[in-house]
Length: 535
View (cartoon, helix red, strand yellow):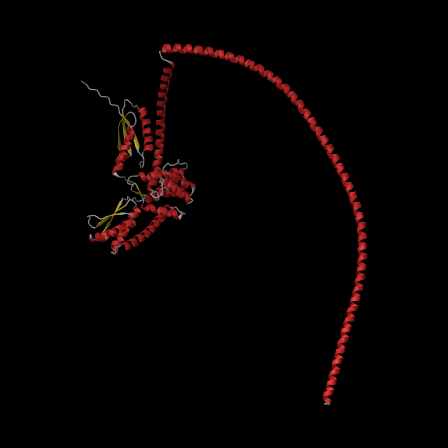
């Protein structure tokens, strides 16, 4: 009991001490805050006073500096005004001096103009005098001309009376005599010059062309419009026809050819003007026959496979031709088009082999004549490239080929040679002329080309009709397969000198009106026979 009471008293006493300590601390904090606030207010007032003093001092200093700057600025303005006045005075003096000089020059020019006007007046007066003198002389000349014309008329009248010819008739006779003499002299001179040029040119041309042809050896292949496929037996014909003709219809539809199955033993004929289609059909039929499975699905599959293989063959053939010709860097599309020429013919001549031959010939001629070898080889190989698509695109093979070469960025020299090889444009370079000559040599040499009997006969008739259209022609004969024509003239109507002109005119008309391979030799023959009988 006593212990618990003591413990309670000690606890109360300890709590009172703690509360007293906290109260003293709070009072001290409040007193410190009040003292700090008083000190802060006192310091702030003191600082405010010092700041006001400093502001007053700075204001006084600024006012004194402003007065100083104002005085200096006024002095500078006065000096600047003085300087500007002096400059203006100087400029005005210079302008006045310049105006004075200008006035002096103007006065001098006025004096010069006045003197010139006086001089012009004098000259015009002298010109008037000369003009009057000229009018007098012209009048005298007119009088003399009138007298001369009268005397000339009298002389002409006397001459007409003596000669018994009018003036126009005399002129006509004189002109006719002069023309006959000039024509005779011209014919003799032209014949002499032409003979000399022929002797020299033919010798050199034969040498160059002979060397070029000897160095070129290209096989020629003549294609026809039909191909034949050998069959192991006649039984295969029925399988090719199929039930109610379904197989033969499928072959014709897939290949675009006409399949002719007749009584010829063990043979089927493939007919088409397009050699590529004909070759596709021939190869497809051979494979179908060897395989033995012939039905529409198999036919379509085989034809597509053959077409792909044939495209690769054409591409390979074009690449080989370009390699053999020494032509590199051709565009891939040009290679494809060049390959199509493997199955293209012209007058029975294979166009790819013809192009390769022209390339060889053009290169040889270029080496002999000092022309650009590469341009001639390239243009010779590409000169007929338009024939690869001339059945699909409108226009001549020359214009089509030029457009293709322009599209695939060929050189202007090659394009011009291709464009000029049939004289669509006038050849303006030596390379173009060489390609034109090489094309003519390749197409004109014996065995290179062929044509049907109907076209052959029509061409001979046209040649003879052209010759017979000239006055004085008695008969004409086309010989040497149309490469030469002999024209017989009437000797009483055509003299020896006129035969030369007639040969040239016939040749020009043949060139203008006919289309033929190679060249045509024109021989005009005048024969005078005198017959008498001794009795």
